[in-house]
Amino acid sequence: SCEGRNIRYRTCSNVDCPPEAGDFRAQQCSAHNDVKHHGQFYEWLPVSNDPDNPCSLKCQAKGTTLVVELAPKVLDGTRCYTESLDMCISGLCQIVGCDHQLGSTVKEDNCGVCNGDGSTCRLVRGQYKSQLSATKSDDTVVAIPYGSRHIRLVLKGPDHLYLETKTLQGAKGENSLSSTGTFLVDNSSVDFQKFPDKEILRMAGPLTADFIVKIRNSGSADSTVQFIFYQPIIHRWRETDFFPCSATCGGGYQLTSAECYDLRSNRVVADQYCHYYPENIKPKPKLQECNLDPCPASDGYKQIMPYDLYHPLPRWEATPWTACSSSCGGGIQSRAVSCVEEDIQGHVTSVEEWKCMYTPKMPIAQPCNIFDCPKWLAQEWSPCTVTCGQGLRYRVVLCIDHRGMHTGGCSPKTKPHIKEECIVPTPCYKPKEKLPVEAKLPWFKQAQELEEGAAVSEEPSFIPEAWSACTVTCGVGTQVRIVRCQVLLSFSQSVADLPIDECEGPKPASQRACYAGPCSGEIPEFNPDETDGLFGGLQDFDELYDWEYEGFTKCSESCGGGVQEAVVSCLNKQTREPAEENLCVTSRRPPQLLKSCNLDPCPARSSIDSAWNACNVLC
Image 1 (cartoon, one colour):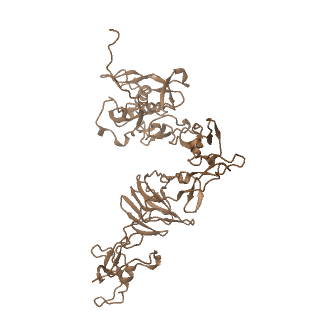
Image 2 (cartoon, helix red, strand yellow):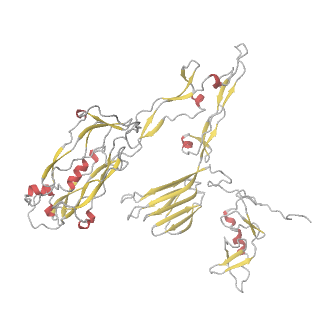
Image 3 (tube, one colour):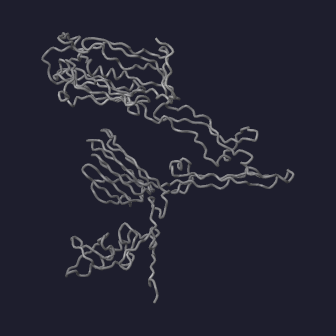
């Protein structure tokens, strides 16, 4: 007549099994190895994760496809599934939490802490783009530290992933990941899948060593790698004991502070290690009164009040930042920070630093101008200026800043040359001039024009605007442009015009001649000196059509800095008329070019309250 169950279960032996203990389900299958099945002996292997009946003992005969249910129920305590703590009891799957208790729904967080809040690790995700070359056959994608979990990397492209490891004891290893499969690398399980166009690497963790994922160059094209993992936070803030009292009697105050603690080495380390993790919140110092007994020399009575009611707390004060030590490529600026105290009359004096430790000390140094310095970028070479013998070829060399914009500031000493001699193996059947023919159109002209581009800097410099259109549509005309003396005001990041004599050096030309092709009916004279200089030896080219830059697209922004892209057209070299693109050789199409534009700051927005009044004069 009793109600309820007559058996109650609880878990036991809740410590992890040693690696050599083996799988419990496998042990139960192997117990049938010496029992004949249909008159024959088999070596039985476990069949796990059966979705229909996870608590039956299903086994597979080794080397065959034969799967047999050797018992309707596995022994109590057998895991229902390989990746779960849930266990079979009396043939039924029972829920087990990460606290190893029956019926518990408690789970591990992403950091591997049972019933944790995820605060002991941080999510790291990112993307790597290969920048390999003939001289650099491999590169580091990402370093994944000891203890990291749930690691996944996907490489897309022709390159290959491989692993380097370093244990806490300093032992190093390497795994080339040459084929699909599951491997054990420094006691960490690694699942690797290799496809024709991508590779996938997974590690559940926690890693038992530091893993450095590297990429090996295949040379055919660039690759990208996307990665995500949870990295343990191994540095944490720890509150200190109270500092000494600020007074020996009569009432004073004392504070606690916080120190950065390394959980792996159990040592106190520099504060910067804890600042590295944004999830780490530094505990606020505590303030308390102390030594409240009256001083012996007084009349024996002194009213004690909380320190901050009648007196401002000590505070940090900082001087202004110094100028950056470098204009680009990463520099340092510093300042002095001191702890000061203000008395009732408002006089400020310096005091010991520990009095200010209840708030974080302001940083005394910081990086600045961390963007890359401008560098030269050489475009592809033009075709040779001749179709036989010795000629010249040209290329555009641009100074590119960290945003990919055409700018100034590159060192003239390191600039790659923009022309070089070239020899076409075809023999010439007519006398050639001894010196290689200089090409003026189209490549050298474009190279020169793009070289002349200048960006406003903090030093006064001449800034030429774009050339106007040629004054004629055929024959020889002129082009003009405006040249200003300008300076960049670094504080407001605005550009100011200066008088012309404020800029040093030669002023760029504001007028030049231009040739717009032969006029209708006009037959140009084939004077070798003039024509070769004007057309770039066009009569030596086999093709009648070639590519040329034809101005730029409209600026992407009206102010504040935008981008323009050079428009590439296929032209008839003699008439300068546009032609179908398929008439030009695709391999000789010049590279994409960008330049910055409309660099002036945007005007402050203002509201217009009313319409304009009438003009004060009639004419």
